[in-house]
Length: 47
Image (cartoon, rainbow, N blue to C red; front, side, top):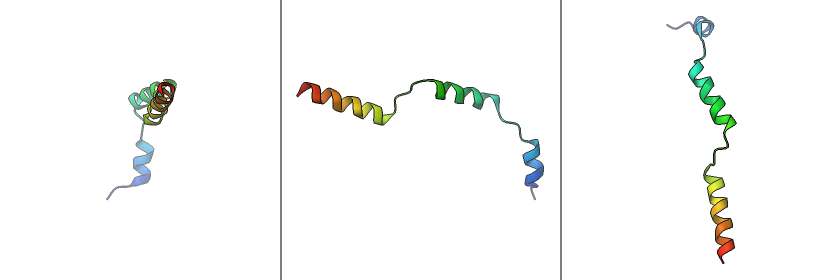
């Protein structure tokens, strides 16, 4: 059986994950909501 306390003590976060987090949080990534808003604004401008 696993000893969770012992496993938690041995845990070390991956540096790759931290690097990815930094890249994601510091970039202005458009999500679906941003894209839909832009499409609606473009459609309103052409009507």
